[in-house]
Structures are given as C-alpha cells and as structure tokens.
Picture 1 (cartoon, rainbow, N blue to C red):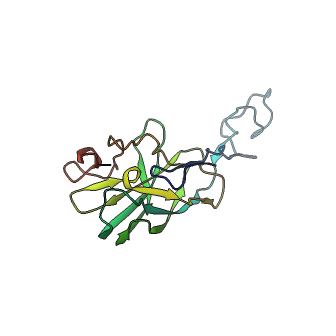
Picture 2 (cartoon, rainbow, N blue to C red):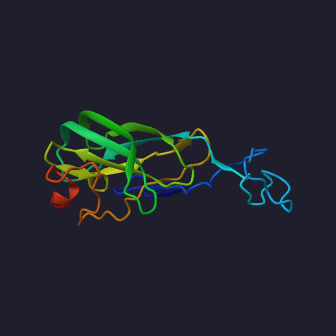
Amino acid sequence: MRVFSPFVSMAWLAAGCGPSTLTVGEGAMDPTPEPQSSAGLGDGDGGTGDTAMAADPVETCVQGQVVIDEGQAVPSTLTGARVIVSLQDRLPGVLPVEIGRFELVATAQTGLPIAFEVCAMAQDATADYGLWGHLDLDLDHDISLGDYISVIDVPVINGGPTVGVDLPMAAVKSSERAWSHPSDPPGNGSDAEVEPAPR
C-alpha cells in the first residue's frame, strides 16, 4: 500500500487488486461423454467436466478518518455537516455501483478527525473498489473530499482474499470539480454545479 501525503488535502492511498480464486470441479457428472482421448472429468483438460466456480463473497471493510483541513475557506464550525463516504464497485466499462456507505451528521470543526467505517460484501475478488467521499454543507451544495477534507489512517481490512481498494482522487484539483457522486441527481447540488471554492 502506498501512502501519498496522508495529512494534506487530496490525500491518496491505493492498494492493488488480488488474483481471483477459482476452484476446479472434481468428479462432476457430465451428460455428454468425453472422447476417450480425454479420459478424466475435472482433470483440467478443458472438457465440460471442468467447472470453474467463483470464490465465496468476502466482507470488505475500510476504516479511517476524515478531517476538515485547517486554514481552508470554510466556517470554523459546520453545524449539521453531513460526511458521506461511499464504497463503490468500479468494474471496467460499467458505471460505479455503490455497495457500501457511511454517513454522519454532526458538528464538524476544522482539524477535528471524524472516524468512519464502510463494509460491504465483495462479490468478485478481481474487481476494483473505489472509496469516495464528500461533505454536504447543506441541501443545495456539496463539497468533494479533495477540496476540504483529508483522508488519514485508512487501513484496509478484508475477511478473505485481498480486494483492491483505490482512492481515485488524485485527479481532483482545487481549480476544477472533477469528482461527482453517482447518486447526485441533476440540479441537487452535484459537484459539477458548484463553483470552485476560493483558496
């Protein structure tokens, strides 16, 4: 796991994806007899008796803290701020699907860490999982994690095969809104509609 400036805005952690775990069927009943040149069933010769089964789903938990950066152009106290951390399944060529979410409505102060834990059942050990988050100031405006919040202390805890957890926020710059949560409906304060915050 690589850690990039964990206490600086737009902090990033990344972990690679683990290999898929497959189980080859043994002694499966095949209604179509194999040619005699392929004598065995489930012997790995590519015959219909060789059945690959995906590994059992495993629970993936991401724990850590977010902290509102000190010195940023935000109120010293955000009463009723809502912190959202979303764990998403990001398969290639498919829109991200949220499989886990952490929400906290609290009085958030600059420099005060807010702990979170997101857990979800991972269906595919080869899939990419993205951890996203943002801070809702009110119903009409939300601020992306890379603008005002740093991610610190985010170990990945798995109950089975390693599942890659990626924090894909390095592309978020203070001068542009590169992050948008898939659940943000149009006209409801999505990041694309919010002007860049002053620095």
